[in-house]
Image (cartoon, rainbow, N blue to C red; front, side, top):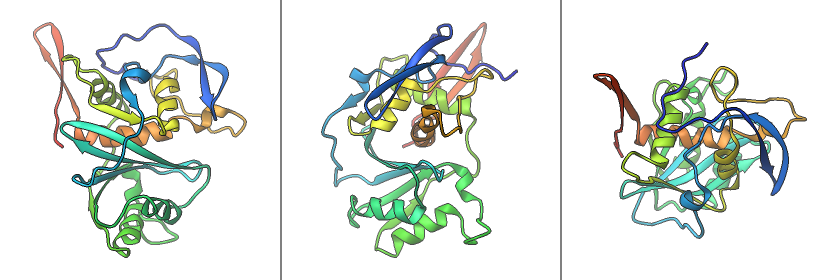
Length: 245
């Protein structure tokens, strides 16, 4: 079986949890929360706005249904999730059009996300990130890519998010605007599967199929900015978040 993720948060036994969709609580699923460090009170706020003094960080998880991304900013060692872009079905150009309706061309855009987007499409002969860059640069944006050659392990990504939410020093390095409903619902609802990975569902009849995608997008940028390093010291295991910015 897959190795258990290392985290500094206790994982309680499996239990029935309810998930929220369009403001409604739906019947529960069995599982243990992935983002156990998340606190609605501590990690959400109202009225976050784009700060003209900082670049825009735009992070993606590539799916046709749903297609989602997050507009963020990195300020003073904290990551602010300001807006989420979420389409039940959509294309990359459609998502870019939505983004450009929100973010003016004065901003430099740093792009993060799922490394599988670097694969060349047989249809377009371009990668997903090339399409994003072309869409934005053709409209006058300066674009910088911050996408790794391969994705971090799921364990590393989960640990980075949980530690950023609540480190040993008691710091909270993640804040989400209350308008980011899909992201917040993911943090409150996404559970482990039986192999200690993130539970994924594809059946259209199951409302949980909407879960995991937005939090995956968040995890890619968190891991890139604040990866967690784990090492052994004598009989104990130590954990440290390395902040690159």
